[in-house]
Amino acid sequence: MPAKLGRTSEQRNALLRNQASELLWYGKIQTTEAKAKALQPYVEKIITKAMSVYDLNEEKQVKKTDAKGKEVTVKVIQDSPKKLAVRRALMAKLRDLQEVKGFSEKKSEYKARTKDIQHPLMEKLFNEIAPKYAQRKEELGQGGGYTRIYLLGQRRGDAAEEAIIELV
Image (cartoon, rainbow, N blue to C red; front, side, top):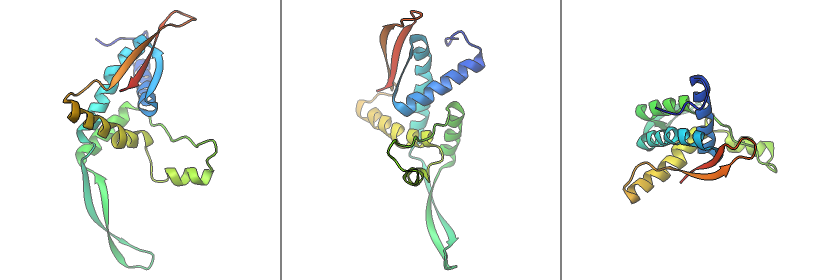
């Protein structure tokens, strides 16, 4: 039975969704030990699901008219139906984070960099994280173990045990 963390199920699900999104985006977060232990299986299941379908793409030939009015055949790479279903299921379990504009980055450069990316966290999950752990699974011959928890000691205000959870 999962830890209730002193919250209702809606609050607990929102907490896990937010912390899982932050963990996948930044690679590590600092939280309490109880929250880290509840978050670990949640994130591991998300990564496993993404690993199972990250390379399922379909190439299609699409006819489009160009600026001169001629019909041109263009190759389009799309998600397969199975990958699309998994992507939507994971979008329900995660909060969509947006790219952050760099301090010295101009607005036009930021818009050009993020023009084609609709869901940055999903892109990162399927293009960076899932291939990395799939390769790790082939090399080491083990699935799972994608996260690690370090205990930091007690928090000063309320003596709650703090921990850092990170992607391995």
